[in-house]
Structure formats: C-alpha cells, structure tokens
Length: 243
Ligand code: NAP
Image 1 (cartoon, helix red, strand yellow):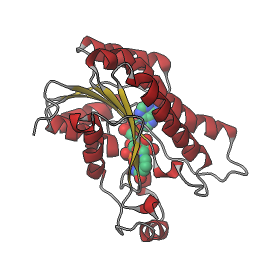
Image 2 (tube, rainbow, N blue to C red; image 1 turned 90 degrees about the vertical axis):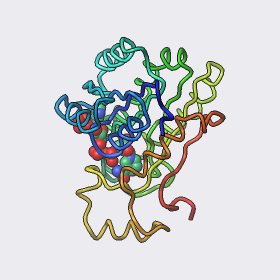
Image 3 (cartoon, rainbow, N blue to C red; image 1 turned 135 degrees about the horizontal axis):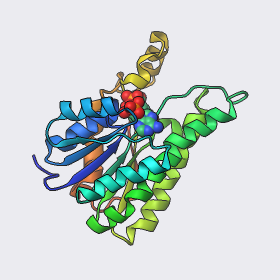
C-alpha cells in the first residue's frame, strides 16, 4: 500500500517506541519521514533501521531555537504534510508534593513542546493542506493517582486538539489526537511486574499494546480516510476507557 506516496511526515519522539513504530508505518506506505528526538545518535540509528525513506534530525522540543531549525530543515526538503507530535517522558508523583519543577518539565515537553512544533509546522501544513496528530494519553481522562504532572499536560493537549482543530479547519489543516493506553516501550519498561499485572487486569482486551499497534490509528488520522475528522482524539487502549 502506498497511501503516503509523495508525502512528507515529521515525527517528534521518532527514535524509539510509539514514535518509531509510527515513522516506520509511514515509510512503509511511501512517505519520506523526518525522524526526530533529542539524541543525534538515536535519530540516526532509527532512521537507518527504518530505511532510505527516513531522514534523521535531532531536536529537543523544549528548545524553541532547535524547533525552528527542525522546521526550517523540513521546509528546505519541500515542507511536511503531517506532523506527529509524539515526544514525551514519563513522570510519577503524588499531588500533595509533586515539585513545581516537575509540573513545568512535563508541561514543557508534552504540552508546550507539541504546541511549539504545531505552530512551527502550520505554514507548511497550510500550504500542503496537511494535518497534525498529537500523541496524548488515556491518563488525561481520569484522576489516576500519581499522574498530576503528566496527565494534566496531556489533558491540556486534548484541549489544544479541539481549539486548533476548529481554528485551523478554515485553513484546510486538520488537527487530531491519539490517546494510547498501556503500550510496551522504554517508558513503561521499568514498571513493577505486579503493577503491570494490575493494569492489564483493567484492560478489557487483557493485554498491553505493542508500539506497532499505534501506527494504524495514527496513519488513519493522517490519511484521506479521515478527511472529515478534525478536533478529535482517538483512544487506542484495548477498551479501558469504555468501562
Ligand atoms: P519512549 O519509548 O520512551 O520514547 C519517547 C521518545 O520521545 C523518544 O524518541 C525520546 O528520544 C523522545 N523525547 C523525549 N523527550 C524529548 C524531548 N524533550 N524532545 C524531543 N524528543 C524527546 O516512549 P513512548 O512510550 O514511545 O512514548 C511516546 C509518546 O506516547 C509520549 O508522548 C507518551 O507520553 C505517549 N504515551 C505513551 C504510552 C505508553 O504506555 N508507552 C501511553 C500513552 C501515551 P530522546 O530520548 O532521544 O529524546
């Protein structure tokens, strides 16, 4: 299948986990993919594993100047049709004493980082009538203990999806979100096995997801099949939030 022939996609957080699986999915369907994350070596390794449709470019999404350079690079290549804003980090801390710095760190990566990238991408997306997929989380929807910093930033991202979806619709740019449930990546690899079992028991499909299972929903949202969908967040969580 070559749904994304002649398309260019930029994936932040593309060096590992969900972002790398999504970048691989786009490249397999004909897109040129700019693979980005903080580490130059990881981006280069991921791009070379994905193949000759992938190009690495290192960028920390919390650094405005670096984000400008990333999108200038994308523009030099002809501009992007899709931005996948996937860069992220885990955080755990109870509300009574989560440090203010940790709140800011989570908001800077997950919320401000994604918005920064979407704003920098906007002129290219407008020109190519493209779309954004913000990678959110099911932890934006419930008061899961320990998720104040992480979940609040993802909840704000869901709001941004709605506002940008509405505002940018008139420019022909769609903005959607993808909210994964429990996906097996580096981010979840150090969870205590007993905690993992507990989490899996709450999932109707009774298993965690492989990162590759997030590629299908992300590609769908970016594809022509989703041409009438904007301002929505698609939940891919094995049924957990349907309870
Ligand atoms: P992961 O395997 O740890 O990958 C995280 C990616 O983000 C890496 O490529 C990392 O590369 C990059 N990154 C981290 N901080 C960055 C920054 N400041 N600037 C640019 N890139 C940065 O994690 P993952 O599970 O695939 O998570 C990907 C996204 O899915 C995150 O937004 C996460 O919140 C979301 N999510 C994950 C799950 C899950 O269960 N795994 C569930 C819901 C949502 P570098 O270290 O090289 O920068």
